[in-house]
View 1 (tube, rainbow, N blue to C red):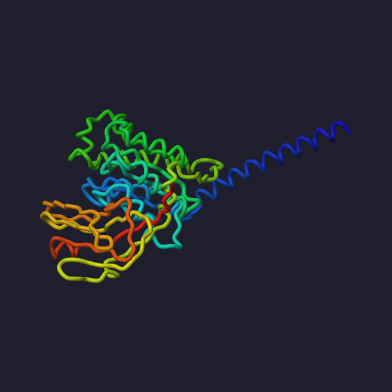
View 2 (view 1 turned 135 degrees about the horizontal axis):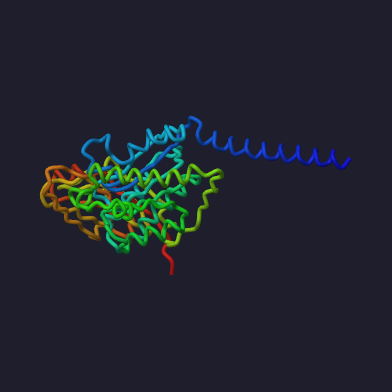
Length: 339
């Protein structure tokens, strides 16, 4: 009787081990089976891969064959990065993505073009927008090598990453650990060259390995915003130029009502010096001077007025026909005013 009981215990133990191994194997098989991983990249020119000598050598392009070879995973990458832009543009690009889309992983790459003032608010708005639209999406934030040190903006990214449970790809440390002079990895002082692109790839790849090699990936947690004002970024509207009415001179008008909100503008640069002036209910509220002397153009999405009230009409005046024709639309965030 005693011997039989021992045999039963041994048999049960063996079965338990088999089940554990089978479960781990099944989890590994599910991760490595041929499926598609949808990846969103939102950033500035570094996020876009500027600095590579050929489009095929951009840092994120290397991830596609690697993930297929390492995990049997097909990457479907959507990159909405915009060169020269700051974090507010990233928030807008995320909110403009069509409803019904979904992403498994989002990589955020900003900081170089941002001012310290307002950076935390606008960077967090990207994280919050992604979390709100794609609740199961994992986050990777990049500490941009162009900062070369752990500046106030970098510390802000680290703090927000910790709050949102984002994994951090530290290319500042990676550049230093390479033991190569910064100038050898970045020809123009900002954008990684081909060698620098490879370091970006290796750094992000290591983070993705750490995420997808786990036996049991923890569930994604969605915290409340650190800055309560970020919650107001949910009330997003985009008004394209086609909805405006052309008026005398170089101007557009749009009938609208905004009790309290933030107004952004979407435009393409025009060579020379141009002015954009914004009126709310015939009252001038702000103006922006755009000086552009480059032969190439860039699309910009920027905040025009942080706190604005409109009762009936928005008017936008341009100093030239060319700049008027390069206007794409405005972005509106309505929020509640406390106190």
